[in-house]
Amino acid sequence: MATLWNKGKSATRIVEDFTVGKDRELDLRLAVYDVTGSMAHVKMLGKTGLLSGDETEVLIQGLKALENEIRAGKFTLGEDVEDIHSQVELLLTQRLGEVGKKIHSGRSRNDQVLVDLRLFFRDELLKLREETLELFDLLQSLSGKYSQVLLPGYTHTQIAMPSSFGMWFGAYSEALVDNMYECGGCWKITNRNPLGSAAGYGNSFPLDREMTTELLGFDSPVVNSVAAQLGRGAGERCIASAIGGIALTLNKFASDCIAYMCPNFGFIKFPDELTTGSSIMPHKKNPDVWEIIRGRCNMILSAQNTVAMMCSNTIHGYHRDWQLLKEVIFPALEYTHQCLEMTSYMLRHIEINEHILDNPIYKYMFTVEEVNRRTLAGMPFRDAYKEVGIEVNEGRFRFGGSDGISETDGGASLTVKDLHHTHLGSIGNLANDRIKTLMDEASAWGKGKTRLI
Image (cartoon, rainbow, N blue to C red):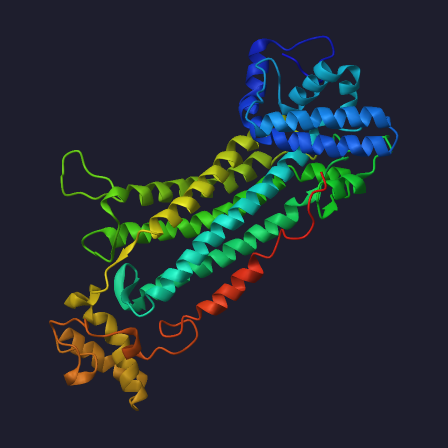
């Protein structure tokens, strides 16, 4: 196997295969970022005099050719090459001669992979932002469209109080605001430049780390070289936490949809082509998409703990087990993209039952409304609570008194306006414009510096 660190003796093939693991497969995702980081490094070497002007230009053109091959899908890692860093340097050497060997001056694979990952994570976070905003806008739109349609609210999985589809959709849109803040915090941690920290202790070359920071569009360098290496695993854990927040929101929403699709609820439904059938029961319309979203989200949620465990019990400095982090975080990111996209896709086809309250089993969700009505009329709250409780136990409860809802209508004629909920964030005052303002603020990150290379 071709390795950059080979000093004349090779590990046995079984050791090479075990230690390289899935690097060749996973490193393809980092290929374009490795070339980008190398371009910045080469330009910096040229400025500091470690490369001549001609050498710099030759290497930049060679790297641009590689970048074009990667973007065209024509780039592969050879079976005898250890990782993306080795492949890039070996190809440059094969194509350009001895000058290709100079690309690694003042650099280690340790800071090289850190740069690759941070550039990769930046793009992933930007993609997550756009996907999350798309879902947010869709939820806000549905919240406004169905703001007047009542929906039973539940606590302890028991019928509790009146809610609405507007509140349900709006609640999940606001949950995404918190998720967006987490992604923004992750952006700030990720968008710092580790290039030049080498193996973790810097080196004796006169490197210009401010220059590579500017070229790569980072906000600042990671100043201390050891701190840069301490960032390996910390960045992955931060990413895992951010996507874990998104996953928790999507997981709960998927669980709601699975329950609400059940005929026992019958609150929502989707076209037949978005559900699956049974091999034995011809009537079934299974919520397989939502179940896979729920399951994938559970897998995403496990990533943060896995990353944390893999990075614990190690002294500072690089350790080979860290390459395994890619096997955790890359799939988790892919699952997050898929779950966001499928949630939006399903919501574009959701059908709402606007006659849920035709069923009289929901009449008791108005008991609190009746207690409040009597309290506002002058009765002490505790007395009103007791009276309504007795009426429920004796089967005499009517919301609105003797002229209120009957045993049979279940409150079917009631709307959000009948309930007089006026405070901020209630079913009568969703304030979705306030939530939109919060999301605008939460998603403002990543709009400053741009890459110069």
